Image (cartoon, rainbow, N blue to C red; front, side, top):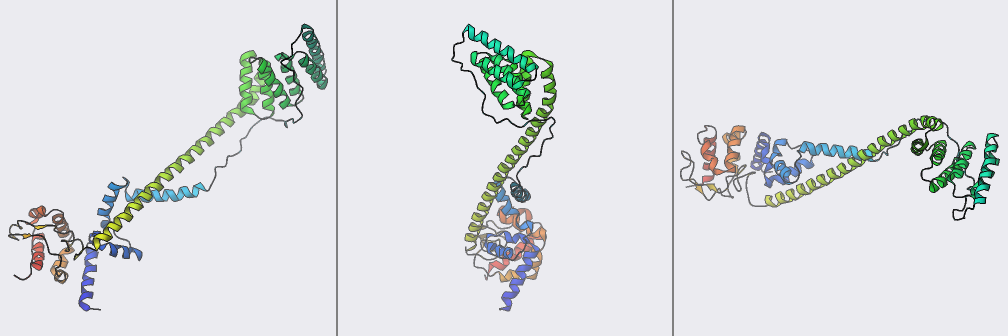
Length: 384
């Protein structure tokens, strides 16, 4: 390998070490990609300019926030695998097994009820009440069924039979009769009471509480009060449990929405960075010289030349800008210039002038900066 070329490469690497911002130059994007492919970490100072454009173009978050977002995405993806498992609720009170017998006989509401039928219905009910007092519930059900068939428009008959089914621990049958009573009379206290007790027997605590509260408003009694003492604590526990898990499920859905938002943002960021690299790669193929530079020159560039010159240093200026086909080995082989490039104050001044040649005037009195610029100009001046 040519020793002179190798020496220039060593000096260029030294320059990159002293001023990593050189790697911001689009023409060096291939070099940055190569370093990163080897696992190299580019100092943050080299990412400042590119990141500032990226932020304003795509998102408002900083790189740290985007990194945090990436961490959150990983966390959320892990959490998505775990379903919310509801804990058991500690409830008090005994329940019974549902009765699954065929539905009991119901009256035909379209039947015309005569006075004789009504009297016979009351007689059958009276027999049923006697049977209930003797604990003969099956007999009571038979008599009440007869009373209902004779007078199917009586809510009281259905409500009374429902209360007997409750004594027999047949809550489903009781609920059917209670529903029939409420269809006939929506204000049937006996219908709400029987249905509430039957639902409590089945462990339907919240519905039971609603029915019992309605019954107490229509016709309050001690039995309703005692049942509410059993039912309400369980109804409250279930309600609190449901609210808790409704909240957890909502939070989970909110996290999913946030995760999707972050994914979309990260995707937009990646697409922008890809397009930006392609643009940098295209610009890197343009004719040029040292990174960052004088169109084809040193870091940052003096675009358009230095019209009007630098008072006291470059009278007459260099109209038309720096040539793109100069020999930069003159700079790389100059130890004084290479040493000056490692001085942050000198590099800051050079970059300031590169951004706007008009800023040259404010640096002409700087004893560090003016000689460096003068020497650089002499390198590019060529033979007179």
